[in-house]
Amino acid sequence: MPITTLFFDLDGTVSNNFDGIARCLNFALKELGLRELSDAEVLPFVGPPFRESLPRTFPGIDAEAALRLYRQRYQEKGWLENNLYEGMADAIRSLHLQGFTIALCTSKPRIFAERIIEHFQLARYFDGIHGPELDGKFDRKTDLLAHLVAKYDVAPTNAVMIGDRDKDIEAAKHAGSQSLGVLWGFGSRDELQNAGAHRIIAQPNELIHTIHAMA
Image (cartoon, rainbow, N blue to C red):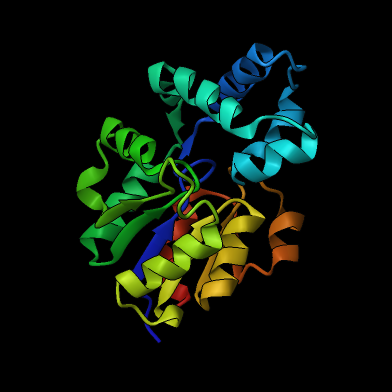
C-alpha cells in the first residue's frame, strides 16, 4: 500500500525546544516551591502530557497551577528557545513537493505548535497543525493520531507517524499506522525498538528515501 500521509511530531523531531521546555518547567516548579530539575531529569517530561507526568514525579502537585505557570513563561519566551534540526526544513519541503499530505501531530498545545511552525516558515508545507487544546482535549497522542487518521480519511496503513519517543510509536500502533522513529531527538534506539517502531533512522537526510521504501 502506498504511503500518502505523514504525521510529524514536533519536539525532538522537527525542532529542538529542550531549552525552552526545561526553563519553563523549572520556572513553574520554583514558583510552586518545588525543587528544580536537572536536564537529565527534564528529559522524560519531553513528550508526555504534563498532567500525567508531573504527579508521578511530584505527588500532590497542583498540575493545573504548574501548567498555568509553565505556559505563562512559555508564551512569552519559551517557544522561541527553539531550533530547527538541520535538514528538516529541506526534507519537509521536498516531501510536500512530492505530493505527500503532511500534518503535525504533537503533544504540544496546538496554539503554540502553530506559532512555532509559522516562526520557522514551514506552515505552507503542512496540511494541518494539530495538538492538544489547552483544556486537555487530545492530551493523549493515541487519541490525537486516531482522530487525525479519520479526519484525513486515510487508510491507517497508508500513513506514517514520525517521531522520537515511544509515545509516537505507541500512537501509531494504536491507530494501525506505520511508524518511523528518529534518533536526533530525545528518545533512544532501545526506547523506539521496544515500542515497536517499524523503521528507525539516524539523520534527517534519511527521511525521504526511507518513507519511499516503506511504501
